[in-house]
Image 1: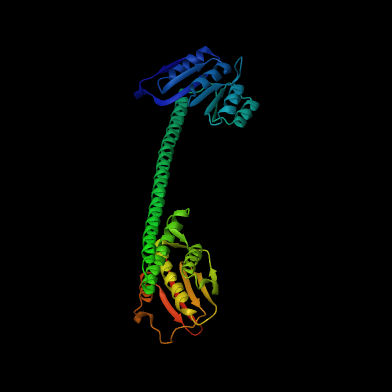
Image 2 (image 1 turned 60 degrees about the horizontal axis):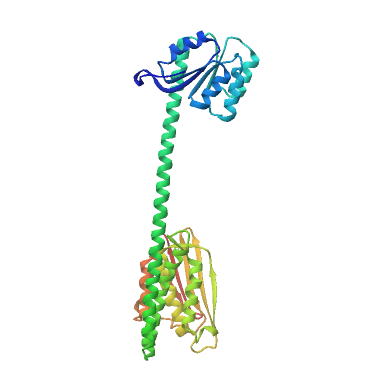
Length: 357
């Protein structure tokens, strides 16, 4: 039996009442149906189980001793499939075994008959409050889940967009580099050819950053140790007449740098390695260029490019040199707020210390 009551007079709660005594069923129906949204009545455990599966009420109030199927068996059946079901058992007998069995099954209350109207209504009020909190928590959880899914979707879309941006920037830089390469083929002046080649290398050093970011799981940081070897390998191929007698020694730690630091550092490496390839070994049969990149402390890094070539005059001052390459190095180190030092006691060595924010 089921009735709906005017919302102003009831809790938004559904209750299943199970008892084999018709008088008790009618009594509790009159008492409870005005206080809940939906009230269902069953005459035994088997009937109660059918109604539970059909309506999934918020609360079950059941007698224990009933024909066909007793309350304990009904509770066991319900709890086996719906462990979170809220159930209160009633009994006119103080049977210890029934009480222990009810507790073991995880019931939410145990009442002795006859149950006072005030006590039963108080119980309904309590469960209505619990159910309301449960619904509120479920509502908030659903809102959180929807917001989280929306955020994940938005982040995924931004991830795709950023990857596409890096991919297009890299492609555009490669196009510019290709144009410069084609232009250099029609030029006979070797100095001008070298100028165009150096410009290609600078563009390539930046394109590699975007390629690295496009390939990484994260889109903000560059795997700088991997980047160094790719960059230097490209520079070596540029000077193919010398690369077979110049060896490269790498001493790099695995570390990620943000793009705004990685690009200037990449350009600095490009200029220093290019200078070594062009000038350091002109009078030597072979040589070594060393590149070191290490973490000195948290967010602090050391970048060293050195060669064992013919060296530079001891009074060398990079801030006063007029060559474009050295000007680029000086300005880029300033840009990342780094410290630049040099040592010409055994070849040429430039050290840059910098930090990330």
